[in-house]
Image (tube, rainbow, N blue to C red; front, top):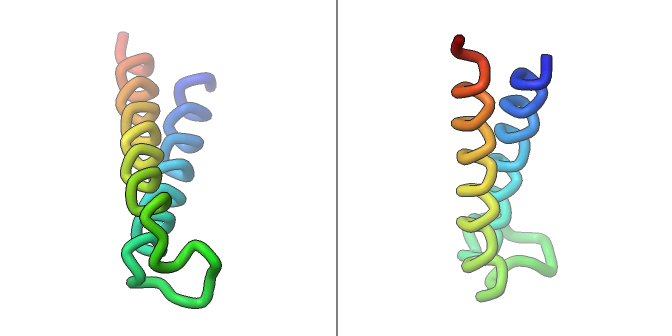
Length: 63
């Protein structure tokens, strides 16, 4: 159960990181985060944290 939660939460974090990256680069408009260098840097870092959580959750699942 713990690993499934970690995988699910990691996917959500990675998707938010992707959204923040796209907003930072100006692909997604209509937000104060659009065309902002801060989110162009933080977005990929957040996405990588989410991917790492998914990887860790998958590793915990295997016997």
